[in-house]
Length: 380
Ligand code: PMP
Ligand code: GLN
Image (cartoon, rainbow, N blue to C red; front, top):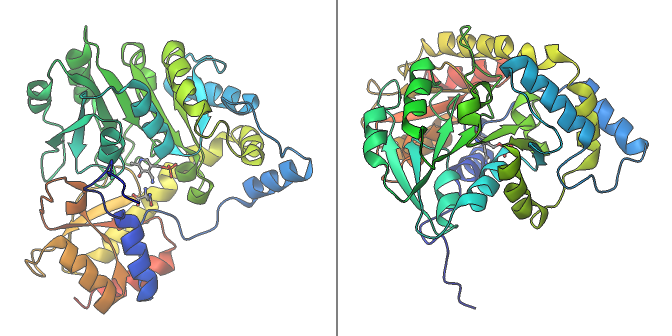
């Protein structure tokens, strides 16, 4: 049977490609972003308890209410947001799904969406599958800040939305107050939506505050703000997250959501509603991850990679001008096969394949894993 592909230019995601290659060559996997250490036993215990207490049937379509209430409380505490858990919060099977659903909710054929590159690899296919067009703007190398003049110049009457991601995957850059001011000016009196990917909200370092769209009522009124429990609680395999948006936008979002997955895994929602009461569990995450970043950065000084800054996420990028001038994809493959360490080549996050010779390393790993990886990387 012939399928007229909706995504003719899309292959298999780099995360699958590199993880598969890592397994094949028994390489240490600093590619795909996930921790290699155990998640909280208290939280897994709460899920087991929920299952044993028979919270095993469909939860309500927008999500388990006590969990939505806990999210509203947390959003008020951290960002001063005043949210109605009934109308503004929807639990989703992961952050990626929340972003996809938000895009599907708003996009019509021929619409344009502004995307910053390097971009998390789901954004552009999510736009294109909806018959819309991604208008890409490169973050300014090497510190990956946003060129707001370029953004202004890219806006057309067809521009429907702008996707933001802070802390940023793959670069570890974060948005600052000056970015918020520029964003405010850009969207004021416009019909532009903001899709804000904030899955790394708690992974932000050096005392920098996370500038969530939830802090700014004039931005929140046009935002779908997307989060992931996977990143916050070291359970990426759970694929559970949520989307916060004003009531009228959430109504439309739920029209799409209800006929896609309808509702999410109930026992984990019941457990998270309880676990969210423990503020320390998410507040302590920045310090924990900053320690891993610092440790990895220090270890990497022994290699010939030049590490860039990472202010957030669990990624740090490095260039390799002292090693070779080969394309980043070639080096990533060679490192995996010949040296036993998998990474992610950053050029895959540019539609054009723009190659600044940068590799992304994931440092949300046990110290022993980081040490073993660096021992191998020193040899190149
Ligand atoms: N956005 C970014 C930038 C990410 O790195 C991830 C993690 N994979 C996600 C969204 C999606 O998270 P989830 O696994 O909850 O879909
Ligand atoms: N967010 C993770 C990363 O960037 C992995 C996501 C995925 O495998 N789809 O590595």
